[in-house]
Length: 296
Image (cartoon, rainbow, N blue to C red; front, side):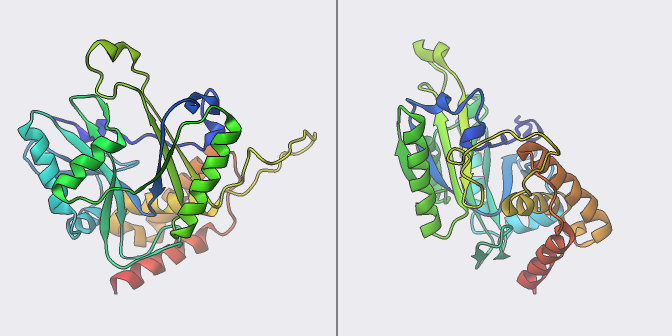
């Protein structure tokens, strides 16, 4: 039986921050999908055949998010897909974006209803994530929406990679979305047959409108006190949404919420080498107001 607590969704860096360098995706087929603006949620079946939910940081999602997910039209197709996998002696964790009715975490969108959009499926039998084509086929057969594929590329230079990235971001902006996600899989995704030894894993990355184009700006070194850029708005909103996902109804209790919000924002600052925003408390209050208005 799959343990959803052990299947955590990977952290996504920007292209310039890929290790050891951005060139690791050159010469590979890159799939570019829309980045939805919601909360990262993983869903699997537990030993009793019930739905088990996790968020990015918590192995067990709050009761609040259980209610949100079960209220969606997508809850039944998710269950159908998970049960069908078991019929074929496999088990899945379906990862997706839970978009709660009302203003989105980054405030770029307004969701007319609470809904769930799949963006990845972890296969326990394969020990890895499915490719986009495999995920799309699985979702299609049960009527489960999945993130939209808006482009593919296979380029040989860093310049061409960033040029295509800008095209994908322009398309996302045209659709009113906060950004894009790029994904690369190895040539033998199910790790079977003679080519199994060539397995190299996956490379995921994300790009958003509100982050600077690191690849295009000049650079110089100046001695003195280090001045860091303020953490981008979308990362602040994402950290606040993580706290909401972990706390559920307790998110509306400022004494419980703000310490966790501050912790997650600080973690994002360390990841992105940015400074803490000065308006964190007003940003938290704005999210609380959005959620209350949406549920009124």
